[in-house]
Image (cartoon, rainbow, N blue to C red; front, side, top):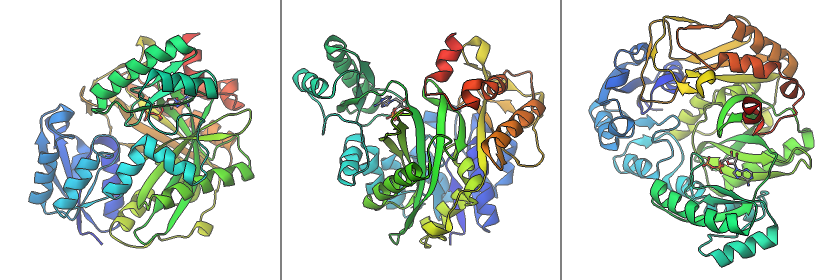
Length: 448
Ligand code: ADP
């Protein structure tokens, strides 16, 4: 087992990883930017190293600074968390060449699954359902129009290297497809340095369902069932839950087994999430993409399966076999997570940096708070606006929903505006209560 690891991240996920490592008897080294200096969570680590000024490009994305910190602090491994360098194959490779274990997949598996065209081709081979569309990349208007004629409008043009919703264009007719193709290519070129795009059928009303999977270096892997992350705004998830409330046991079985097959075929070790869109009418699901890292919403899976995902990531990365078999994993109860963002829903979700004078978090039976915030904490303007994840667990979905309402009603944050009122409103909405939602539901509600 490792004796010392560095966490190449910040905020709640840095604290989450420090906690897991501590429980395993592993020393931790936190890195921080000047904008995060003084944050209390840094003192929970055994050691901390400043890696540069506030802007992420100069600190949390600064590979040279992070590797230098790892060398000086003499760590065995680096946990990248999510975001920043977590899906950066070059960083993964630099760690490997410096003989520092990257707590995540191999460089090769990361590259394979990170290329959406290659990932989709592997999925087709493994009989994992994918959207109808182009078999590979699209490089001409003629090819694009031909595919659209075959699969029918609407279609979506997507970047192979895509991320954060960039390089995507939806088209409802030939003219929109012709212009969408060119703008998607140039957006992908400037965002990712790779203008490769492909085309697939666009599903108008979809739910977002994703499967947590994990594998070791000995060829063992398992899935930890699914999460439903349908409540989103501008592709950002707001509320996640597990299990998915709209599929039955046989649909669940098909979905989770498909995800597990894909991961096995990629010879994957570490934690990954296989994301799908579900057509709520036909109950057909289609592969969206694979995220090769721990996800923000991993706690809901931990609550219903009892598996510590971060601890298991560290174990398999150190070469230990997966500590459970597929048959050992079952679903118990229901969990919901609300992402509490320092954003003002009344001002188009403008981020709200500044000092939290009051931060009184809820507690009680079945309530888990994953946060680095506290009364007196100063939210820097440089990063993501998520300041806490409130997770509840109960025997079934309705009990969990009521528990979340209770917990949200206790939560006191001031003077910073947060998404707490929006969560309370959403969880009271009849469409959410009755699962009659899709990934554009929140936007329609806010527009109305
Ligand atoms: P990124 O890596 O940029 O996040 P994804 O492939 O995950 O790209 O797609 C981002 C979002 O775009 C999805 O969450 C979904 O809302 C929408 N989307 C992508 N493909 C489709 C599709 N075929 N039909 C409907 N919506 C889609």
